[in-house]
Image 1 (cartoon, rainbow, N blue to C red):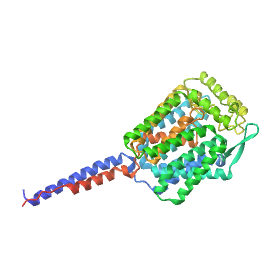
Image 2: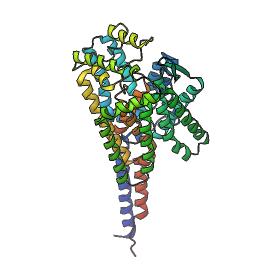
Image 3: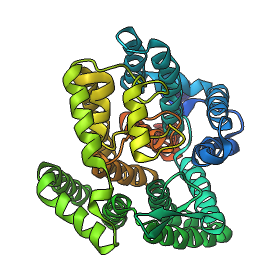
Image 4: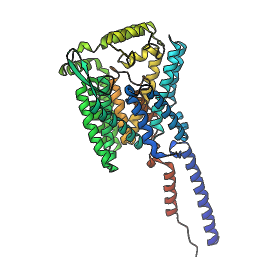
Length: 459
């Protein structure tokens, strides 16, 4: 074979190999949302911030909040539609929970209320899924930071105080209650701490200053709101973020060890919940000057247990209990002084689910949420970027709040959005990071192959 013929054959072989590699890469690209070329990628932070701000300012916006969230879901779906198939394929268990909520209208004591609130709930969890899977991770973190920073700083400036007990007061900010103010401040603190390294690395000086102002504002609100549950959960989640940032620089084995330790601590804490939480809760209440008997949770939980015993397997139907016209709900609203007759619950996630969906619903939620949480832990170990670290901390925060708050079960609520987003982050790979872009891997591999390939010469 002559030299020219050999070079031609080799050149043809290289072209075929490159075409085959590119074709395989394109197939992999089409199978992942990262390949989707989206419109206006610079809008990602705003697509996150807008609906979150609407949910935070719910008390001020009123009916504009659900309209804004519905519009945001439609806008994200339209602008990021190439990523939707992969989103549905990965997060179908979460959508199945929404369908279960809607199907509960079949046995609901008030089918119309269940259909109405079930539809709003489906929209709420869809927003959480979309911001976690269809938005770039860095933009997601930036959007959350902007939303919570705006709200918490505004709360410090324009917030109000509410009565606490007979002669005391607590800070409620712009929220409907002091506990809600404490929760929003806790999330704002976690988000600001997680976003700070990203902002410093990007040399965004104005945003770095805003992050420090937000941290100061959220710390102040956590103290003066006197929300014991928010203080405990924020402390646990905040320590977790710091540990992840420290151990994230170490080997995968060290990160795995950290995750195992954190999971063991969480498991032991949950297993011994009754032995340590009540004394700690009582201590915090007494140290802040609050009467433990004024919380009212014992009465709520007793009534919830009675309702569960009446319909243990499938419950009364989603949204069918806390509605105007239900005499039992009206009695609890009147007893606790809830003049608006809305925004109230049993302050316990398992009991809230059992009342509305029974043991069937509780089992479904436990399976989906548990699988998403452990998947999030695994993905954080593999690649602990700031967004994953934040959602791991959020998941841990919510885990420690299950016993005295309702998590992931309310409509048009920022906690539901963030809780579902944390689960979706676990079920979906981090495919929006350019470092994981298969097209770039193919290009790098092709370049390296061309550099190292040797064509023999014949003399």
